[in-house]
Image 1 (cartoon, helix red, strand yellow):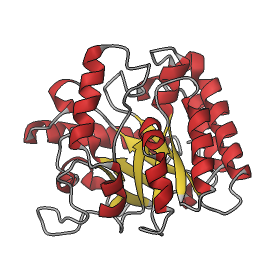
Image 2 (cartoon, rainbow, N blue to C red; image 1 turned 45 degrees about the vertical axis):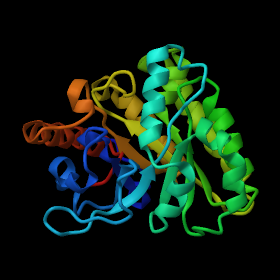
Image 3 (cartoon, rainbow, N blue to C red; image 1 turned 180 degrees about the vertical axis):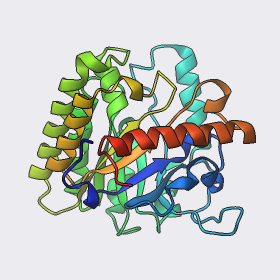
Image 4 (cartoon, one colour; image 1 turned 60 degrees about the vertical axis):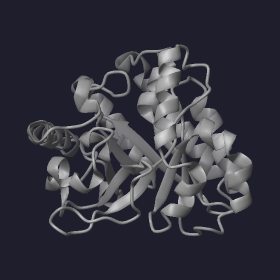
Length: 296
């Protein structure tokens, strides 16, 4: 077994997208309940639909541990080059919590997250808040599926942090691979570049973290939706080793496992599909444990 030397220190979360993007986070145990009691499991990253509550209980009455909330996504950007995609993104953003409300509605969550174009559009509004509304909360900014977005998002994060706000980058490796592959994820060809770019970005943020305001996270998308996920079965032992070495070098990275599905399962799971999804999730988490990415 490959093992990250410092994995005992690294927290990980799972996204509620495994329930389908419209799935209710309070049902997260239907697909990920086996994680409870696992070392360093920090909770879920909930999708921030307008009806999401800042605290909620599962159907059995126990609390749902929401680590972070994912807010508005990309819009008005060049890579959304067809009308259907632009309409879809616009509709999604309309039913996600508006960014200002996202920051103020979830004061007890460790972080909230928006995509980089949304952060750019709302920049002046966010800077005026200056971290005073929710001083213990981090605003994560996520890179988008373009080649240069990782670099420009890191620069964005540094600029926000210098205003006094707790800010972080959420490095989505699926998005970066999509950008490197110019519209498709070519895992083996671009993996080495991906690892180097993540390491360089983390080094840049550490060097510019003078006031200690910058946090670093990573989305690892291992779902079946090929347009926004990595095929976990194509990751070789050598690739897993690269990722372990990256985490050893930068143990402060918060790992968030995404798991989007295909077809109707991308939107919502029936009880039968939820049982199948739980089985698939168990298999994928087993691969991550076997290869030293997370600790059992």
